[in-house]
Image 1 (cartoon, rainbow, N blue to C red):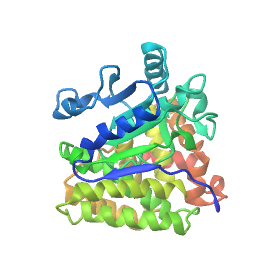
Image 2: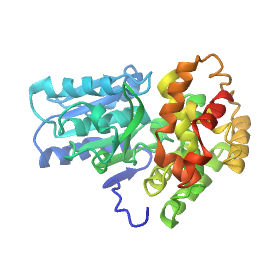
Image 3: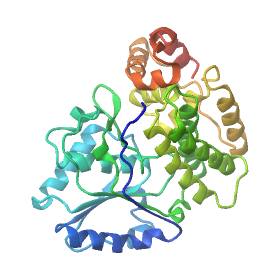
Length: 356
């Protein structure tokens, strides 16, 4: 991992009211590149105040996207087609507004507009050949790190796996903590725990270095303030924790929890943040201090963790879940080292799932 030349977000604006500056940012972009702006906005905001604040021009395209389920490759392909056929031109910019799923969809669509074929063929590491359309991320929920990461996580026909590419990284992000005020408490917790688990997996992983450690430690400290101290400025701190956590894994990697969570999402459709929490709760042998602290955070936040979600599965479904998790080799290596296959055979993965 030493010496990787990582790609980071080129421009970022942070602070209460930052969303109001999106129109000026887009105006600068319009002066550089002719064409329409495409807005990909979580449809939960369709009847909320944010809808009236969108700086959509008369020639622009507004797509309300549904993220009730985890993002699927077929949905990304459908949105890409809708944008291509709108007026036959390539957009000047995309703007993704929403939580991690909406941001991942925007990143994936960006590269599909300039690269041939389906999103399925780009699931993996560094498979994208050409830069995507200029894209701007506006998170309304914090924890996934999607606003800064190089990964657009998608569920495909055979697996859940991200499009991992330098070309997926946002060109601009707008970080406005005020956009988080309407997030329900349970969703706030489960998404925030994605960041907490990012930091734990990064810090306890074999790929750790001083760069990723610095960001992960700060993300962890901020998560503790948000979920244990219940700080009054928690939205600002959660937004920065997510940003730092996303950077930390760019130069290291996530671990066993995320590998297991991918299997839960692929087979059972469990949302990523919830799946992470279900998986992390059975990993005390690998992240003992982190799991203990996570359980404290559960108690302080009054969150009831789903349990027994795997008990009803038949053999074939469980086999698929084990296979999805087992294919995520970099995650297991970060957790257990180069001998991870000996330490985590399929039978052990199955045992961990059986505890969920």
